[in-house]
Length: 364
Image (cartoon, rainbow, N blue to C red):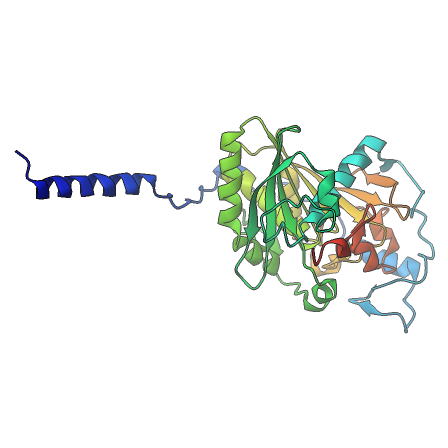
């Protein structure tokens, strides 16, 4: 016969074992996939003096005009001799269809929603016009989780799922102080550890992303496990665009379920993230990347090319009317798209895309 004390001990042991089994298992970062971190043999033959040539063509800025790193903060003059601005076209450009513009506009609103406090860090999808008017344009989505860094770098974002579109969205927030982004930009390139072999990235962007890496991988792999047939879109505005690029590559490098067939990247006002070798690696993954630049957005031209940086992804140049989008047919940036207006850039064009203004949600 089992004594009462022995029975209690047995029950306690069973309870402990059950509790341990039900405890949340810490997320283990997947290892890098060897054949997805190889550097391509051919690097892009893109001269890094495209902006310098444009500066010579468009002439120096007036002395009284505020500028940073040689770029105007709010250009008052049009480019002097750029034949490619606005409606001009050539064999390397085309005009986006209405359906493409509608898709870009939708993702721009998702990127700007990341500035809503209720969404990040709140983790709620607002249902009231006063707190987040643009959220009402996306009534079919479900909030999955906010991505919040406790670090001073404040890398943040959110994950939502749209079951009607069968899509999982990973969205990153940029900085809420665009004056600071210019004043505090540190342009140091550092090694890109997953790839190496000459690939380098902006150290600050990469170190900041690493603070939220496990959150991103944990939530996204969990969602794709539950919804294996869904597509994945990674997007963000400003620094959020840089995080989107790094995060999409990270997902691709660590889980074969994230691939060119089901994942794409769309960024808005993204600063340059890395050097030509990094750009070549990004292109080699074959992940579709649309890089949207609004008219004269100054942040899209930082850090400067002459500092060793190069964009990758197909540039979609949103024109002044905020309706027309010029598609620049190249995996890398060209001289005849937004680079053609340097140095007559503007910070104002960075703060709104497709008439969605950053101010609408900074305090909501």
